[in-house]
Amino acid sequence: MTVVSVARAGKPRIAAAYAAAVRRPLDGVPARSATVAIELDISNLRKSYQATTTILDGVSLAVPGGQSVALIGSNGAGKSTLLRCCLRLIEPNGGSIHLLGEDVRALDHGALRRLRAQIGFVFQRHNLVGQLSVLSNVLHGAQARISGPRGWFHCMAPSALRDEAMHCLDLVGLADFAGRRADQLSGGQSQRVAIARTLMQRPRLMFADEPVASLDPSAGEEVMELFAELIRQQGLTLVFTSHHINHALRFADRVVALRGGRIDIDAMSASLDARDLRGVYE
Amino acid sequence: MSDATLGGPILRPGVVPPPRLTRPSAGMFALYVAAGGFFLFSLHGSDISVRSFIEGLPNMARLVGEMFPPSLARIQSVGISMLETFQMAFAGTVIGVILSVPLAILAARSLTPHVGLYYVARWLIALFRTVPDLVWALFFVVTVGLGPFAGMLTLVVDAIGFCGRFFAEAMEETDKGPQEALTALGARKSGIVFSAVLPAAMPSMINSALFTLEKATRASVVLGLVGAGGIGIELKVAMDLFQYDQAATIIIGVFLLVLVVERLSSMLRQRILRQST
Ligand SMILES: Nc1ncnc2c1ncn2[C@@H]1O[C@H](COP(=O)(O)OP(=O)(O)OP(=O)(O)O)[C@@H](O)[C@H]1O
Ligand SMILES: [Mg+2]
Image 1 (tube, rainbow over the protein chains, first blue to last red):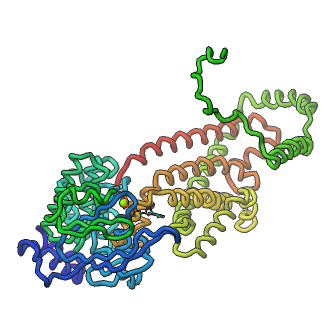
Image 2 (image 1 turned 180 degrees about the horizontal axis):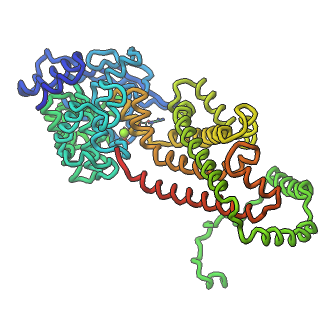
Image 3 (image 1 turned 180 degrees about the vertical axis):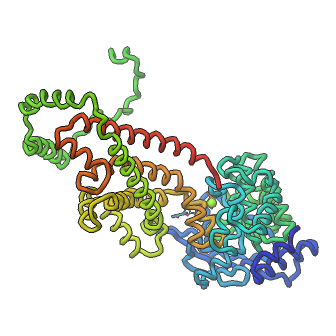
C-alpha cells in the first residue's frame, strides 16, 4: 500500500486524516468498544418533496465508526432520499445530521464540499463520464484536493496523482483498462471504476445506493464482494441500500429497514434471518 | 359481418378504436383560415406574376448561355479572393466558437453562476443571432472600414449567435448522473463543468462548430456585396459589367469551395468523435 506516497501528495490536514483512517485496519479488526465515535448521527430527519406526501417522517439512526449498515425497504420507501440528504445532494426539511462530527445542515458551501470529499458515494448507475478515459474518471476522485486542470484529465495530472489513480484501479482489478474510454466498459467494470473513483477520495466513510442493482447476478455478487472486501480492509464505515435480503444479511453488520417514512427494523444481522425481513415489503 | 372478411378480428363489444380524425376546435379552425388568407395576401404582396416569369425565361436561357464557357481571364485574382473568403470564414468561426464556450456556460441554466449573468448571456446571444448578418456586415464596414476584417467580425458575431445557443443547449442536455457524482465527491463547479459537462457536450459542440464553419463559408460569399471582403465583390462587379462568363467561374469556384468544406467537415466529425482523454 502506498500510504507514504499518498500522505506526501495530499494537503497535510487531509493526509493526516487519511493516515488515521488507514491505520485502523492495519491494527486489525476495527474496535467495537464504547469508545468508537459515532460517524453518522441522524436525528429526527424529515423530508417531503411535495407538501402532501412525507417521504421521511422522523428518521433517527446512529452509526459507529467501522460498522456496515444495510438499508432496506420497498421501492419508494425513501432509501435513496435518506442517503442523498446526508450529503445534502437534496436538502432535508427538518431534523439534524452529523457526519464525521460535522453538523451537515449548518455547513457553508466550502465546508460542505470538504466534508463531501471525505465520503465516497457509489450510485446505482456508475455515473462515469463516458467520453473520458477510465484513468481520468478515477482521477476525478481527487478533485476536492487538487484544484484546476490537474484534477480534470489524467494527461495534466501530476505523476504522484496518476500513480495513486492507477493504484486505486489496480485495487478493483482494472489496471489494464486505464486508457480505455469509460463508455466502452461493461456494467460490472464501470461499477468497479466508480468504486476506484471513491477510493481515490481516500474516504473515511462510504455510502452506496444499490451499488449492484444494474448488474447481472454473478457480476453483482462479484462487485459486492470486492466492494465489501475493500471496505473491510480499509476499516471504513459503510451504509448501503439493497433489494437483496441476502446481500444485506451477508455484507452488513446491521440491517435497518425503512417503512412508511420511519425505521421499522433496526437489528444486528447476526440476530436476523431472511424471514424476519420479508415483512418490510408488505 | 362482411367487414370481418377483410381480415380484422371481431372486437369485443365496448372495445372501440378512437375516431380517425378529431374535429379541430373553433380557435384552431379560425387560425387555419387566417393562415390561408394571409398566404393569399402574401402572394399579392410579392407581386406574383406568371407573365413576367414566362417572359423572363428566354432571358434566363440567354444569361446561362452567356455564362458558358466560363472565362478564366481573371482566374488569379478570383483565386486570391476565394482564399481570402475562406480565411475570413475560418478565422471568424474559430474565434466565434472559442468565445461561445464561456458565453454558453453563462447561458446554461444549470451552470450559470448567477441568474443575472444567465439573462445577459441569453440576451446577447439572441441579439447576435436575430440581427441578420448583412446588417452586422454594414455595421462593421462603417465602424472598421471596408475589407475582410469587417467580414470576419461579422462571422464571429454569427458564430456566437449560433454556437452560443446550441452549446448552451448541449450543456443543459448532458447526463446529470456524472455531475451529481462529482458534486457528491466534493468537486468544484469549475471541475464539474470541465470534467463532466464539457466532455459530454463535446460531440454535439463539435458538430455545431463544424456546421458553423460551413455556414460561415456560404455567408462569407455574400458579405462581399456590402464591401466586407471576399469573393462577393468580384461576383458583383462581374455581373454589373455583364461579364457573365467570368461570373460563372466565380459561381463554380464558390460551389466547389462550399462542397469541399462540407466534405472535410463531415470527415473530421467522424474522426474527432472517436477519441478519448
Ligand atoms: N426529485 C424528486 N421529486 C419528487 N419526488 C421524488 C423525487 N425523488 C424521489 N421522489 C419520491 O420520493 C419517494 C422516495 O424515493 P426514493 O428514491 O428515496 O425511494 P427508494 O427507497 O430509493 O426507492 P427504490 O428502491 O425504488 O430506489 C418516491 O415516492 C419518489 O417518487
Ligand atoms: Mg433508490
